[in-house]
Image 1 (cartoon, each protein chain N blue to C red):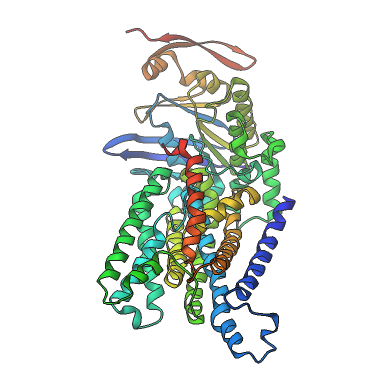
Image 2: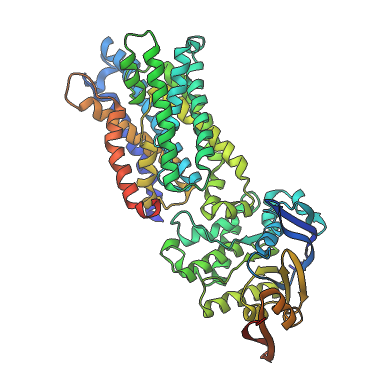
Length: 261
Length: 325
């Protein structure tokens, strides 16, 4: 099944408490690729993702999924098309791993048979290599293990779109790469992947495209090397950094430190 | 997983055995041949007293167990229970008010519906005070506030009433019992409890989704506003209708889901129906115990439940104290 989908923000503005967090954002994401949204703390990354998954209602403008306004989709339908991995991993009860991953099938409760749901859960657990923990309680897992389980929960929906807010926080480098490669492979299979990320090197490794947010506006948009230019990095983060080489297809960035002056 | 399959049949068997015990045990022990004998007193005791009492034990215990499991799931807090959160006290206040103003005499449905009104008001106040993701501390304090208001209100209203038995009435409402209830009480309260239980069960997917927090649940397409209404209505009906009949029987909804969680897993939806069965078993057992205790008059069931439940609450709060502070 080939996924061909567009997720688009039009004149997207989001205000809260008199403060403009997103300011007329216009951006379109395409399935089959990984887009990384970068920017300093408070730039509006999480808010943008919240609007794109339909959890936050924009003050002005709209988000369209394949020309259909997101707000006009039923919540179930929206959840079947777009899966969201929140930044703060809340797990309220010590349920076992299989039960937690199966929560990802809730939007399909009236749509798919038990066998289909179980098969999707099994595939998600295989992809994240979490099958061996299926009977363990989530609370007994380490932070990294738990992050993989939560990712499996998101994959279980087998949705066209996966939007993840800071999916690599708290993971050691090996697990970061593992999760990054998994999201990468999902994009290769045709899913649309959008994530927020702080690590410039990891963004360059995983993303086809980088969107840089600053004060609620898009200040750069392109391939990692094209978007994260030294002037942009200086303006947005106040750091001196530059691309030094490509190694096995992955661009490498050297960060020299905070920009002086 | 194989052990889990046995839990529900075991609970139902337990409920059946305890219901039989509840019918047989009392100041007069009924024999198996009560049907065959032309023993009019025995039959009257069976049909007018013991049978309604056993059935009420099942219905009210089930109601309290179910509402405890639902509240714990929704508030994502194992300390939640209609008793500890003050919802039961508010239900009793509502019922007492309808008696005081004489509305309860107008129609047999008014008393239970006033209980439901009180319970729903309690749920609304709880949502206002504590919200969804309340800390254990906020939740417990909200319960303290609601209970204080309701208990003071009940005491005030009953003290102002001309009844010479006002003090006894206060105790009767605050420490509930199943004694001296009739088949009519059962017939009026059961439909309300069944409707409430259906509303609660409709929200089970929302309860499961809330395992991932509010944002997680909403991203799974769950309408939390709807879930909140379903639960306020469902718990209100279930608790209000049962308190209007039996008075406040606390801690059932606290203890039962907590005991079942290690056996059945912590998934909120899978605890709902078993907690109803467990609640029925606990209330039936407590109601048999009050009849077996020595002494001139029967101890109120609410006393026994609080004696079991309050130390349990203490232990639970103690084990959670790091999160609470």
